[in-house]
Length: 458
Image (cartoon, rainbow, N blue to C red):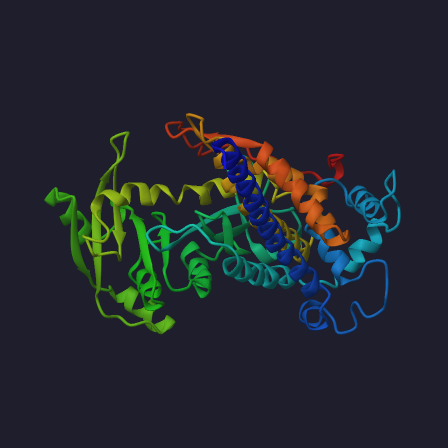
């Protein structure tokens, strides 16, 4: 066979193979959508997550599944406007349809418990890791734990449940919730998330996240988390950690390490009296822990100290850890997307249940976006293989495309076609990764206010 014909045949085989792989990936994504549709229409699931036994019994225009799907649609404008556009998509009409009033929806949502979103989030995450070949760091799934706060509507019920704070420039107390999440930084997946009263500490919330860690997980933590019982809890589950220590307020061992001028050392960390009490409360052993300390000098000259359970210096040499701790940065970025892109504080009501529904519903949709977009990462790399810079998916644009379009996956029958069209949009909107770009953190930014009487039109 001539060489030219051989090349043509080889290219054709590569094209066919690429199409087969794409088809398999598309089918995997469709499996997740079908799985969600089956769960939200399952009677046992509905029974677990409806407020009263008599809720969602009659056939109405807003059954359990419809309320669930509507709430995950990243709602931003007025409820009535969102409802009209939602039923326009369902009925495939040319103009928005007034099929359900805002009042009717508000009555229906009172019947749905926010726990429906948390349970399904965990079920989808479990399915995701079974279906996809995920990215790992030296065999570990990298999980970053981080917390933040969210300003809530100024209502008495909300303030009593979540608590409040008193900012310097404010007329009275401001209701505030604490939020926390455990985030897979390499695969852009939220493993677990919590919105709770502000009085609950970040460490306490992190301990709840650890119910969802598995074998071969490595937990990355910032300076506010390290404590003997915190490390013991992770190790007791058979996992590992890497945490930045607060140099200005830790124990004598750390001060001795800094004075030694060593780059790394292995110490025996013994529990204090308070740590012993906390371990006993959690049912954890109080035996001393072997901890590896590493002194890292950052590019700007700042010094940071990391504590890790990866004490094998041959398997995990010193040079790995500067880059390892930097890998937790995506969890910080994720909060930026939550607050500015998804508008997590732009609540659609003024009750505790609505706050919980809106929070978990939006996190659920953000996670679903990450799962559907996971398969396009290789295509983006291939698209820019000759570029000087590395490129990644533009998450702001991806979330924007999932608004309205994402819920069609649960309404229409042509799931595969919709997924392919979304993939095409994801691949076309990319962001360059510029490794040397730095933006100083603004510690006192002007927080955006959301007013119920002035909702945007979209």
